[in-house]
Image (cartoon, rainbow, N blue to C red; front, side):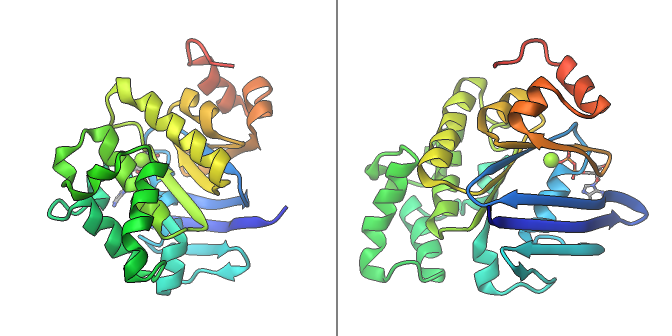
Length: 249
Ligand SMILES: Nc1ncnc2c1ncn2[C@@H]1O[C@H](COP(=O)(O)OP(=O)(O)O)[C@@H](O)[C@H]1O
Ligand SMILES: [Mg+2]
């Protein structure tokens, strides 16, 4: 199995506070790692440092066999795309969906100008939005639909790693499931490599191949999904699991 991502001794401090404490993590290609942990445990900090949005104080990040340094190339930025809890963070409100997708496709030279329309329609189809959505603005969509647009934008540049940080947590309960199902479909059909973050073990169960548990800036357990839900290794994992009223199996 080839490794898509390796994180070695990654440490991030905010002033005197250690938010990530020597994190070591590996992610195999075409698999999804579910990262779980309570609020404030450092999940988003790990996502941001891998995505290059903040620089680590210590440690290395390897994408494939390439070390990612503080100053990343345009190509390296392209390779890691992030989906945020709030889709508006990645959608320009003054641009139509057509412009949003075209900008990403052209900036990274994914297709040439004559192919942008066709590819944009394909991307919308992939996230189960109608082609006529292309000429609408983000505010004309529901939260769940905006998250689909953000997913299409992230996928448009064909990243080697997709990081989704609580992508369904801000959505109405009624649409959370359908967006989660989309992630499941993308994962099985496109064989994406994903780091999927959630504080919700039901969500983690639905999308992960491997589960990593974070607590106070440290990784306390990394395990296969099946082992994690049946025989968690760490006492803290058992506590997390026993706090869930009814687990889907
Ligand atoms: N920019 C920041 N400055 C100072 N402290 C921060 C900053 N971002 C996060 N933190 C702190 O770091 C810890 C981890 O935060 P975060 O990575 O957002 O956790 P999670 O995503 O698991 O909720 C928390 O205690 C949080 O208050
Ligand atoms: Mg977070």
